[in-house]
Length: 68
Image 1 (cartoon, helix red, strand yellow):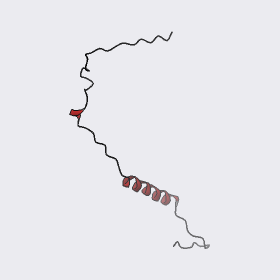
Image 2 (cartoon, one colour):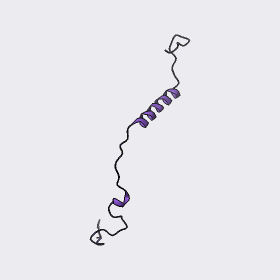
Image 3 (cartoon, one colour):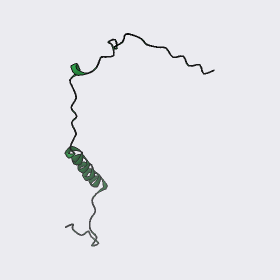
């Protein structure tokens, strides 16, 4: 229980102490939050890389947009 001040009122904590307590509680909640781990296949099992030719050749088109 808190002790009474000089005028019989309970003493209050400094704003810094209150904010520090809140910050530590948020950090604790963040640290205790369960994390989801997604299975990620190794790089060798993924699709073709960007620097490789896509299946079907190198047929890349050109788009011209005329704003006039």
